[in-house]
Length: 95
Image 1 (cartoon, rainbow, N blue to C red):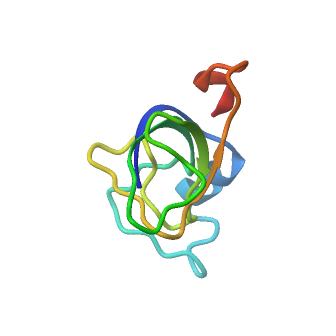
Image 2 (spheres, rainbow, N blue to C red):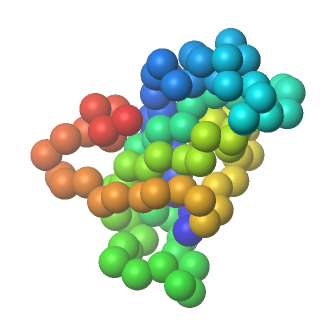
């Protein structure tokens, strides 16, 4: 699934990763762009994706070791957790 990212967030988990606190259990490769939460719109679906349609708004939490959604050209695979969001909240608030 490909999501057009509209907003990301930077929370305490991202701050700890960036500070190197979990370095022993969570190795990251530099340069690293923090941010594991995103809000956006489904742009493409893979063959195995169910319950979502192109154009659906979603929020997602990415695996802790992924480069953040603010990274240019970032791609996210099977480890991400996506959820649809309703029409009453903007994607900026979703993130």
